[in-house]
Image (cartoon, rainbow, N blue to C red):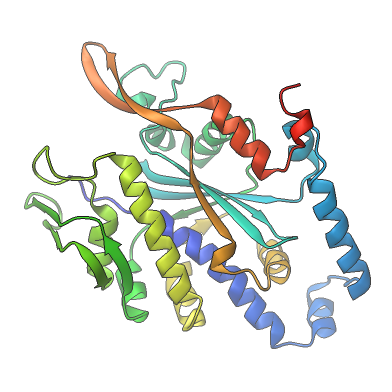
Length: 331
């Protein structure tokens, strides 16, 4: 097993934390003076409430995904955790800041996507796109898998400092589905994972091992459903981390995390998102996985394991997320 990073989890949380930190700062400063200083004209409270109601109503009356993509005020962010030049983890997150909801769709790293001129088995996985086409290529691929959905921003993160962040929170509690054991003395640094089954309070190093674990040294060990099982475990970790991180030590966590993030979110946009997202809770985050199934394909005489997306179900997922009218679906 190569040394790799499960940092997309922290990317998601840090984006949420950025919203909360902005909200925290916002409540400490006079509203009118604050907006005047950054050059934003505020609306009257009554007008803002009416606009929010109008936006929510509008989102519930789209006739097609194309209309929804064009007119919705949802903010879509792609979170990427890297393993060298490969995207070891990808999550599409769609934030409805009007009704304070967030929908997160995990994209398995082995998702099959064939690009012209890239015909080798490993090149047909979505995790290979970043190395040749960068983040823009990954965004195009995810948009393709999700019916052409717009992706407004991206967040890329490495795992440096992650252990310290988790330790600063006093560890994260998770339910370990089975005894995780794995040894790789050739890794740099050498890797040794030994996490007992059951409810555990994991420190920073243990948390990284939990997130890095995919399979053991024997064929019979590991997640029964492969990468899908690991995604479920990671989503459990997200919820646990978020619940604890958002409850206290907020400025400390953000300070320790943001220096390890690369993003195209501008400061003025971050402030805008923060003010609109005041009051969002971890219960408002909905976790899903790209529809599809795992299967093997033979390429140049070799068998490769892929996750094959179900485009029809992916379309239905997006139609539900964007509130496309049921009577319009299928026309």
